[in-house]
Amino acid sequence: MTGENSKDPLHGITLECILTELHGKYGWEALAEKVNIRCFKENPSVMSSLKFLRKTPWARAKVERLYIRLMSRRSSKGGKEKIE
Image (cartoon, rainbow, N blue to C red; front, side):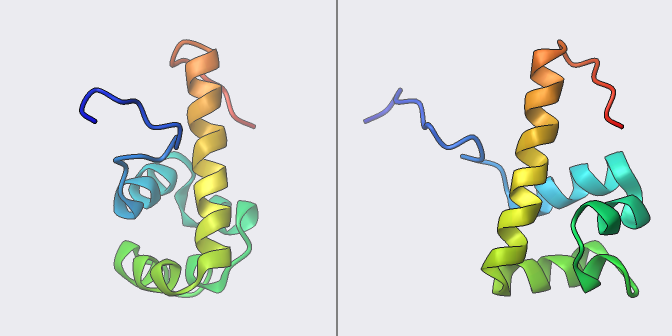
């Protein structure tokens, strides 16, 4: 079993890491435009967003898709991506 590669692009990446990376890249305002959820619009913080995303599968899925798109753009451009 050891040595197997997971086909899940998020394998081993925590939700906190995903959210921190997206917040660092976009900031709360742009993140709220990309993923239209209230926890990014009203008094946003990493902790309150994590609490909401852990309880809300549809919102978490949107955030994870955005992160996957960001990572795929980075890898396709050798780490030097331009997004928007």
